[in-house]
Length: 616
Image (cartoon, rainbow, N blue to C red):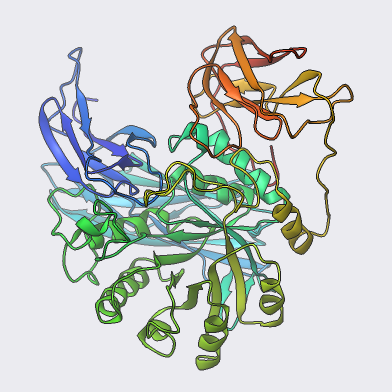
């Protein structure tokens, strides 16, 4: 790699991170939910000498986030080595305006930077592959001379005949490979998955010309026993469970999700309300260490983010984070709306200039998407009929159904969405009867680890459609009756407990840390019915090339996810197993006075590939 430009990229560090390479400080970044990239060229050592990458994060100012956020490196990290002439950070942007079933035009813009010491004559070639893998005719730009230390923008179009449109039932994904060429030789490439779809908000919502509504849920980012650092299989499992009861949209409450999550939403056919932050300048409750402590602070350099757009009025941390977030997520067809924030407690006079700038940045960096906000008490906070209704592309608020209808009446061409609402199914009557009402995101899809406001660790309880492990609750079945054509009922319960029944949701897994198998231990009667009244402890053992990374259940009380024992909750406990090598993994479960059980999981070498459509 000698002679290359070398970068280290983090999908998320929680939080107030400082990154060092070989003792040299690379940068500081306070927000824990955004991705970062630092240039380590000239600081790394090539050859056989080790390089030491050190990351320090600091969550000592508590309470911080008002819900569980973990701490440390909880998303992927990668090293990038490029030619000195290469595509800039998150610079490639794909738009497909007004596609039809007959034709579409893929419009691409990107930026190439020359980090070398001499000028270079550069062309860019784009090659698009359709969902079957077939490649379309390549497009090549005119050459541009890029001076050392400078950059240049390139644009090109790729026509597509009879495109395979992305939608909720057939989430077709295309692939763009952008080749950077110097003197006819490819020196760098950039891979961008994208979808071709026509999503519009104009007095309602249409996807590829057909009316659709958000059958959405809001979810925090924890995965219970796996915390925040969840393997992608765990994310896929949860999305599949939600899809099975009729959910078609996810609100990332209340921060940017991981790239892994958005990849799954793209491939599985979900719409995403991609949210920026839970706070702006004002703390929420007593959470003195939350993002508002840094929101308006001047950023330090380097930021780990791309250069700011012209719409940014300064370089405060929120402007840096907001711009980078938009650039990172803008190519995902699953992203339907950007949410500027959740229940922001700032006054209207404070919020209005910030929202004005946010919308301007969003529209400059991504004119193909729409903006909304999860407004707090908009009827009494001056938003209805005020600047918020003018600025936001789609009216959004939490719990105030009437203000959505009122805002739409004040601006008949504006669509509205209930960004947060409880599980009361009666709300859907108003949504269905109001064309401009595009749907709702209920609170919440699954239970979540708790809020810091004096409630940790027992927040969640019975307020969700399903528990943290995916057992559907009564309200989940009620919502299913509204959202799905096919109805299901709760399984029958057992009587006297006699045995443990053990099943693996994935009987085969890969030796990839993104892959896991959830082993379900059900306390059952002789006929196999789950005895939901049982809370007996279950002991798990693992033999073979596997490791027990967590024991879990749907319980929301303080109970360790470590060790080998977990109390059954409503008759069920789980072991979450990861492969350490290829071979046969045997998981056994025992409980006092009951007949035990075991199940085999086959592990093989390979890389985890997320599924498409309905899966798991």
